[in-house]
Image 1 (tube, rainbow, N blue to C red):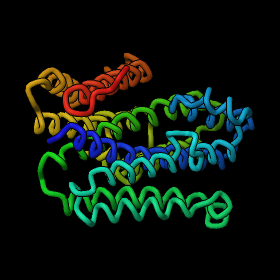
Image 2: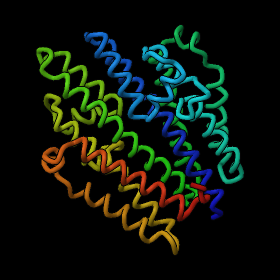
Image 3: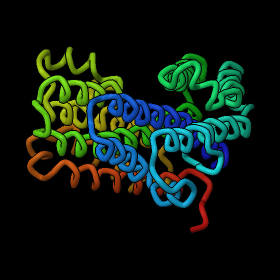
Length: 316
């Protein structure tokens, strides 16, 4: 496959997944903002979201003070923000258009229709319909895109690069969500009675990665921080866990391997094996933040190596 084609397919999938994960992060922040808390705590939650996306400085330059409405508009509609949902869906459509002949007509129409609908959304319209409905729409369109991809694309290298982009992006974003929200939630424990407020905070985190029902099925009792971390890091049966994502990444790298990618495949396999055989006790004793920090560094390394081995070379 031409590296240019692989590049467009890979980034088409990454941007769609990024839009969905951004909707998830914004949704959990919005839900938590409705819980009883001080103004400073609410502001800290929005600042943490900007920081984990590495957009805090850029946001301050454009908007100054951090307020929920400003952050939401910046992360959803701002064309100058390359990581806004609008920018991600536009980039998804542009990459799909560049390889339209490689995609099935169903996948192209699904991607194009998503962007056309996104163009019609405005802050005023979203206020009327409710911001929760918008977040659900973004997640639904991402689910639809994946379903159409799996249901209509030939099981060849094109699909492999799409899947590779999807799961590499998902691994990165799951780690980001868990790192920021876990630290925020743990720092807030002990500041209330540990009852309903804690329950709703941890529930919101699980809902943000579609894991609430899964958690109940796996553990069948109260929500605890360590079990949340175990589910989202080490449970390969959980679709958005780090273990599941790396299993998919390693499998797809092996399937498209070439003469230059042996080291990339080895590193992906090594990271996948560390999650498959890892224990949550070891992760927590080391420190969750330190573990996730190193994991994200490994994901960045894999992304760079995939670009060098398969995609269009970048000028650094």
